[in-house]
Structures are given as structure tokens and as C-alpha cells.
Image (cartoon, rainbow, N blue to C red):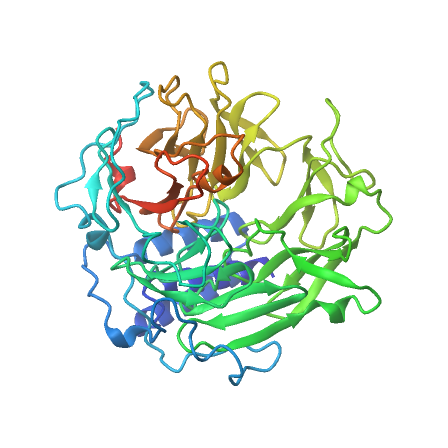
Length: 527
């Protein structure tokens, strides 16, 4: 079963790398992978083969053509697509199919670097304290070089023009650091307004394509670039951005017939496994107490594991969020209740970060308390967690298999209360993760990581690549400044990096989404 899972991952990644359209070569590659997978005795070796094959399949020189009007019929900006209500829908458990099989052209290395006409200067990898320059907010969709770090940067959204007339929002942002904003072939970006409305952008032209009728937790399909999933109370739904067709994928009420549930979801921050098969979810009752943890297999369309939480104490049932690990091997539950110093949670007394096997057995506490974090793959394909270690004030890495904690970089809190978010969504660039910080020493930077976006290599003494100042002013006393937390994330190749900024407008909610464009061979350019 594990080898089949890896095969599915390899197939989805290869198809995405080739624009989502099978070719004879790719089909032959997948067939060869089947034989190799059946013969391979070692799952980590299979993961490495998948990673290597995916990286080899990605284009690095070809310029992607401009998308045409026929690529994706959409409603005019500000309108809801006509085919959203009362349209024919697929039967429960079926995935709606697109009437047009040709996806939009994929991003390519040449196209990414061409956003800025001049060559990429050497990337900054030192730890010198560099002050944030005083710059006016850039106009939308006009690339420029970051004056400090030399990366190609631009503002993607325009809060004055891109929002629908009936959306009361005053800002637009990428959803969160633990969520993938790019679709399977890198041709579309999903953007959130601060009032929880959803917008689609063309990833090539960066133009808005209109508002989408989605509820909470929209997640792109792993291989179909036109398909999104989202949660609607106790239903997992699917939506085709090409046809506007909505359908029921799974009704979780049927799995809990004697209970009155309010929602079955990850509670905002979780994501499915990278092949889109396994979903780690929690069921909550009408009082928003967790009644069960569950793992849903989308391929089999059934819940394959549940863990009843009703006998736990009220505090033990308060869970911030849940998720499945990238390869689908582990279920992570982030409990609001932290463990006492020197203690970890267990099956009977969960607290802190609890990690279970996919069958929700073998529950073990791996961290007594956990700050912001995200799952990732290290350079060897192992599933890890990059996180803020609150006990040691470090950026650290946790091995989800054996619980080993590896400190990566110390966090200096002696000047300001630095906030951090982490993103490990760049699964096709294993061994790297992203960090964004806020609440540094505005207007003076005191540490090398103040108010920045940077990449970290997931190994002791690994390299750090500093990408941009965020120019986002976050005041913990201003309610609207939550939206100004940068929440960095990236595409799977780690060539396009998204973050949010209010550009100094603290307390307003007037945020915009920015993008950093990196050349596809940026790791090879590092010292």
C-alpha cells in the first residue's frame, strides 16, 4: 500500500510537471514506475526516485506561451459565475469533469525569471542586520528589484480594483502559510479577501479572473488544475473553476449517524497529503467541541480511521487544528492544552502536539507545546515539521517518524516580540522551507530576521537565503493587523513566493498580496 501511495504521488507530480497532460513519454515513465515500485523494498528510496523524477521532468528553459481567452471561461470581475447554482452536478463521490481537457500552460523557469528584465543578482545569505528601506507602496503588477536583497518582487493584488462590488473587504491576501495557493500546473493562484471571499488570479499575467463561490478551506486538487475542494459544514465539496460545476464529494454525517455535527474539517489550517488522497480531519459538535478525529481516503471515498474523543475532558477536546502529513503517513493534532514542562502527551492524556499513525493508532506526544509550524519534506524525503520551539527560542525541525528535534537557528527576542510563520509547501524542492517574520523593531531592525521573508535549509548549519523585507507593520493591539501578518507560502517548486503586507498601514486591514520570483536554479547559485 505504501508503494502504491508513492506511485500515485509520482504520477501526480510528473503529470503536474508536464502541464497536466499525459504524453506517451510520461505514460511510459509511469508504467516503468509501476514496475520499479513493485520491486522496490525501501519506501524512502521510492520517495527519492519520485523526487528525482519530478525535478528532472520540470522545464527550465522553455518560455510558457501567453494564456488564451479559451483557456478558462470565467465570469467578469465582480460577478459570480453563472454555473454555480442550479447546475447539473456530479453524483456524490464523483469528481466533476471539465468539458475542456487542455489545461493552461505551466509556469517555466524562463518565464519566472523574465518578470524582471535584468539578471538575478547574487542572493543574500549572510546574517548582517539590514534596515528596511522607506519605500512608497509599489503599483500593482509592476515588477521591481528589492533594493536590499535584489530579488524580483511585485504586488499581485489591487484592493481598489480587484474586489467584487458586494465584498466589504478592504484587503486581499494569500490564505495562510500552511496552504498551497497555486493550482496543480501553476497556472492559477487562489486569493482570499479579509472577509473570507475567494478570488482566482492568472499566475502568468497576474490578472484577476473573478470571484469563486467557495466556503471554507478551499484546497487545490493535486493533479487536476481546474479542480478545488472545500468544506461546507459536514460536507466535502468539489468545484470546477472551468465549468462552474459544484458537487458533493462526501457527506460525513453518514459516518456519524447518531451525532449532531457542526463541521468536519481541519479547522482552517490543514491540508491533504501531497497526492490529495488522505485527509486528516476532526468532527465537531454544535458546541464546537471535538467529538472525533478521522482520516478520509478520497480515492476509496470512505473514512478509513476514527478516534472517538467524547470521553476526553473538555480541555483535551479543544484542538486548534489537525492535518495529515505530506506523504499521508501521520495524523497531527495541535492541542490547545500544552503539556507541563518535562512531560509529553499520550493516548490517554493528549496535550501539545500529538502525532498518530494513519490508522489513528500509536498516539504519541512529540512536543509539549508548539508555536507556528508546517509540515515539510527534508532532502532525504523524510516527513518533518519546521516550527517555533517555544521552550528553546529556536527555529527547529522535528522528525515525525522518530521524534528527533534538530535546532536550526536561534530567535533573538531580546529586542522585540518577533512573530514567525513557516511554510513547507514546496514539496518539489525538498530540504527547504520558508519563514516570514513580523513585529520586528520598526522603524529600526535589530536582528537579521526582523520583518522579512527568508528560506532555510532543513539541516543543521544549513544555508539561509534572505528574500525580501515585508514592509508590513503589525501591532498586537490592532485587531485588523492579524491580516497584515505576512503568512509566507510558495509554489511547489519554490520559484514563486507569496506573502501579505499592509505596507505600513497598521490597523486598517488594507493588505495586499506580494510575490517574489526566483530563478529555477537558485539553489545551484548559492555559495
